[in-house]
Amino acid sequence: MPTPELILEGSVEYQFPLSKISYYRIGGPASVLVTPKSFNDLELISRYIAKEKSRFFILGWGSNLLFSDTGFNGVVIRMKYLFSEIEELPGNVLRVGASVGASTLLRRAQEKGYGNLARLTGIPGSVGGMVAMNAGTHLGEIKDLVTKVETVTIGESGSDLKIKTFIPDDKSFSYRKNHFLSPHELVTHVELRYEPKDPVVVKTEIDELYQRRKNTQPVDYPSCGSVFMNPPGMNAWQVIDQVGLRGHQIGKAQFSEKHSNFIINLGDANSNDVESLIELAKERAKKLLGIELHEEVKIIK
Ligand SMILES: Cc1cc2nc3c(=O)[nH]c(=O)nc-3n(C[C@H](O)[C@H](O)[C@H](O)COP(=O)(O)OP(=O)(O)OC[C@H]3O[C@@H](n4cnc5c(N)ncnc54)[C@H](O)[C@@H]3O)c2cc1C
Image: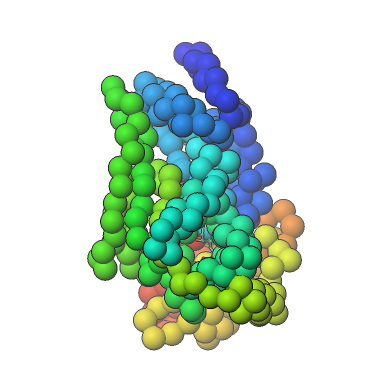
């Protein structure tokens, strides 16, 4: 059956290599990659998915994903340009578009003195991805800043897209998880609470945190950051060290010497290389230490 034309203001690409847009630089082709640039685009995409009964996946900046070498048989919706504004609301609240990158948000925080946001320093994702993942650092998680989430549901047949708003409570998030987004829900905007501070103080704090990251993480290699979530009472990197896997390499993937909970792509690693390292670490952690490791990275097939 010929694929019906999908014409957007943004782009539509067929058999698009996901390795080009994932942080890992790994992944086979997506049947269709769409990058919406308007709300109307999103409606057309949603109708297309409903009509074709297609699988789909919502992609932020691809910094927490391992795409399989076999690619993704379905539509990948890339949130890169649509909803990319930061707006100040009364009461020290920002309304931030889902495609805004953490680095853009932090630059704005440095200019305007938005305190509290420093906890997001060094996370390379989009605001939509950070909310979906409840991203955070040793300073705290995004959940403590989120006062409202706006979403639309993709792929529902027979209706136009409707914007829904959600006010999170203390059960809405847990460690690297949200408990309110259905698999069909795409985050469009997020409201974040900040504390006004002297911009100079905010700038210094964020600059120092960036420097600390550079010193402790293998930022020169493609990766998805931490591969495993920390097990209770311990850091995942300590588990990797204790089972002798720091620096261990399979194919062109390696548990980083610099930060052993990062698997880095040394060149042309494939998804099997990374998955084999993940399986090896899980097996050894279970067998040698009785610890269950759980992936923070999302493996998409
Ligand atoms: C060098 C490096 C350092 C990192 N450090 C940290 C860290 O300190 N702390 C931390 O928490 N993470 C860290 N990460 C992981 C990653 O940056 C975060 O998980 C981030 O939140 C992912 O955002 P993203 O936009 O890249 O999402 P993606 O990786 O594209 O997607 C992640 C998940 O979010 C969903 N998603 C994305 N956008 C939307 C949307 N608009 N609506 C609905 N669902 C959506 C996707 O479907 C997927 O399930 C690091 C990664 C790297 C490469």
